[in-house]
Image (cartoon, rainbow, N blue to C red; front, side, top):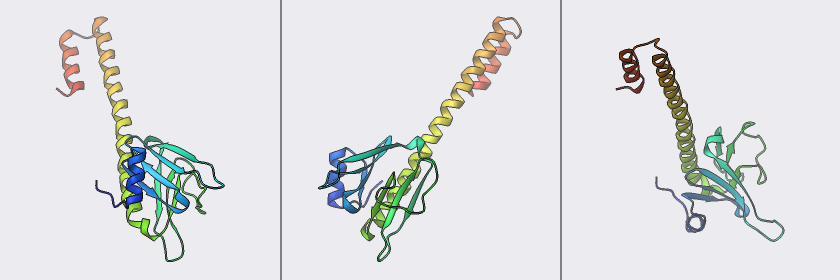
Length: 163
């Protein structure tokens, strides 16, 4: 996916090793990596450096609002508790931006939603695979106990493995 980062955002992405970075007001940033997102604020005159990490598998939703002529836009992560009403620079998992950030924030929202879906599907696959393994073990035990024949076991095994 191609992102419309400006040169400052591209430089920050390179520094962090991130896929994409959105830099908002007062230097606040949201950086997307392969397995997680980092929302941070660099050290400034009266502010110490801080950051939070969010795993895609723990993010429930992504909220976004375009910037207006006067009002800022925002991109926020919901990892429980819902999207907050009064978004500010100290709202956890949020970056506040001006009008120039609208396009990139839309691109990032789509990217994050795809990642959330991807991680959600991976979790479901693990559950399904362990269920298939559990079923095979159960039928192997039945065969061992003489309750089903070798032929019945092999038939069930093929069915479970989709062969």
